[in-house]
Image (tube, rainbow, N blue to C red):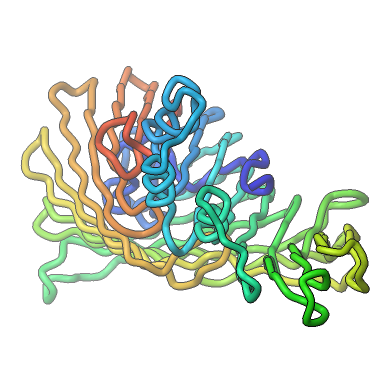
Length: 427
């Protein structure tokens, strides 16, 4: 939990315009927005050859179980008057998924980004990760009457999993419009793009093992020989900037876009196709063990254990989450555009999920100065995401703001909220 709540800065997980479409923005991202979303779209002309984005703010906090309304009902004095009924305990336990409680918290600042013709550059801070804890059974023991029979034994070898990393990310991208005839395919054009990310790793925590044990046993045949033992263990690899920047690495993203009959746009992207971070600075293994025993007779050979140590380990490498994304959009008229997107997680590093994600989005421009955005996403890590966004085009100045709620259309029923704001200047 503490690792997931650590300060997290992210430059490319989401942006204000893309968030307004619930991240279903692969085909509709153009100009500087294409830098973080789809570098192939940098090949297409925009009104301004030079665009600069000053620091952009992203804020996200979510979990996979408890909504704001649930928090108000069960975890505040106003909601429960300081006491839970048996039904309240059952209802609260029903909120926790069997596969674990997951927590994500991200705060992001994109420090600088610039686009010049088909090239784009950017500097920012990036962090990715989450922590998942399989606590439903333990919560059940804590909240409900428990009969510790003489053979009671609870053991969970995968009580917690996950990890996170943070890094300085320097990115450069290029989009190129291929120069030959596609009339055999009836395509208007095809563009390809690549983004190179140089990474200076600031910190990493990668959980290797987290286990829990609660056992009632005996050293003999008498009641006085019985004991109740509780044990918890966590082992993780960590690296921190104590003497130098501990990690160095890179990643490459590839994308392609095509236009058909002017109004259709298709895109394909492989995110973090290759690359990773090698942690060779101050690398350590954290080992935390806590064990205690309650004895019926106060005398036993089973002694308490309390270990909290760090030991030096060799350099190690962490891969980055790889995703395949496909999208299509259709411009219905000058005011209205529809989009659809499919995202498939290839690897499961740092909280990435392999469950597919499908989304729909719409952009409405009632006047040239204003663009209204909305989108919904189903599946993936968020399960359901609903977003609303606004773009204001004030001459060379573009202002974008967006809000998204997780697993609910209504904010108070949501178990997570995402906010983003950005300002872009075109010259």
